[in-house]
Length: 193
Image 1 (cartoon, helix red, strand yellow):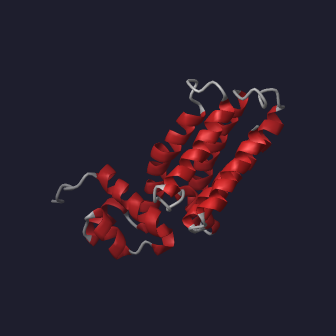
Image 2 (cartoon, rainbow, N blue to C red; image 1 turned 45 degrees about the vertical axis):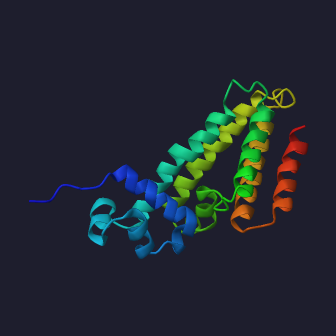
Image 3 (cartoon, rainbow, N blue to C red; image 1 turned 180 degrees about the horizontal axis):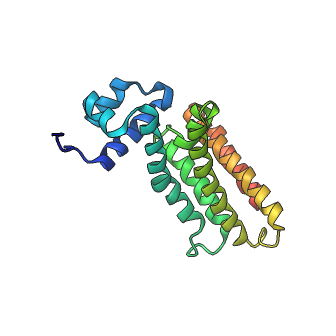
């Protein structure tokens, strides 16, 4: 008879997210994951099958947590001007770096890493970044300067802002100096003004 699981799966995924976020997919070794999650090898494999399956669960968790928070900000009707919502997202990302969090965005890290060779991971990354793009599109619709853009032009601007966001978060992970990061955020402000 199989023994019941003695750990909370959601908590284990949260802990694994922290490991992957810090080390990246390739850099997160099995010992790193076991230590970070507080699990034995057998428990990890029994619950999650393999590293890739665990990472896909982590990306889903990240989307539900970090991406959802970003989308909530971008679609918040309490901030009437959508351009201000977009600037808040970029400013919050910059502030996180100045407060010591240089991990960047887990989706951005995955986009530059395992999604280049794994279709399932690429699909998960695309879904998360697509949710951000859709949130930016909603914000642009609430921006006085951008509300009257044709949908295709607004969508193109939203795609470009996602690319700018990915660049900012990737530069943060690469430990680019804060002045360069500040200028990247300022450039978004100039574009939206």
